[in-house]
Image 1 (spheres, helix red, strand yellow):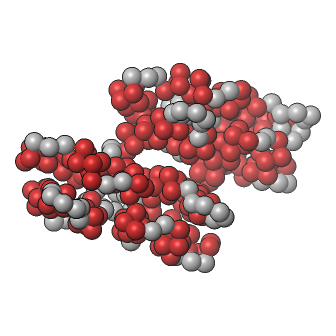
Image 2 (cartoon, helix red, strand yellow):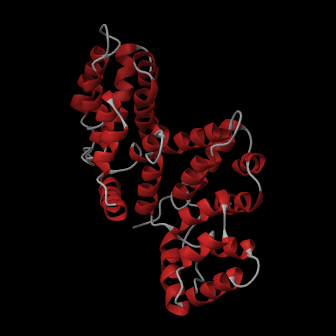
Length: 316
């Protein structure tokens, strides 16, 4: 697969798995831990290269690299390192499991993962979830959510979205349907929103969004905000925002994770790790343009220690 424009982490040209495993073992052997050495290796290698290091470490030392990292690290720094070491589908599956574990449900994390993945990714997540946790993702989603929000998650988790080109002849009709299901009637017909926003292709939906503004004189986002609330509103706004402009969508999510009281470290990890090999360079530029400070400076102001050093290494 060709690299997308804008990754901040690319395959390391001088990759030497033996030298890397020696460095990692040395960093964790004996008293104390050399966190800088761990960051220097793992933040500068691609996910595929990290998977090679896991195998090489066990081959060379008869030890599990993930277990050693867990025993040596702690807190958000540990969480971020373990995220880096997981293949993308496994990391997404773990995020979903964590969001549904124990008392309460982290609906925003579920939305962020499921509403932004393509069909192939969703099928891989479902398979990995089943293999890793011996649970069915769809059943867990049904158990943890309810109502129209549950129905949208079940729909998305099928991985059945049309991924073909836009159908210009249908875009105006779909926009009219959305208008009649929401602003154009008393109450909201959520099933029509799901039929279009969950099932139609990204390319088609971008046309629908444009056509909607002609019908309504307001954006689809404003219509969703006026017609829906809570997790259902968040899910639809995520779909619209991601399909309109994924780079700006993630820049906004990063700002949201850092603005106000407290910091959403889990969200910082999810976005920075998952987009580092995709479009984080572009997200950085958009963040700077929109929020008038660098993403590095924003992160520096919110987190500290080795966790901060790792995130900055991934962003740079």
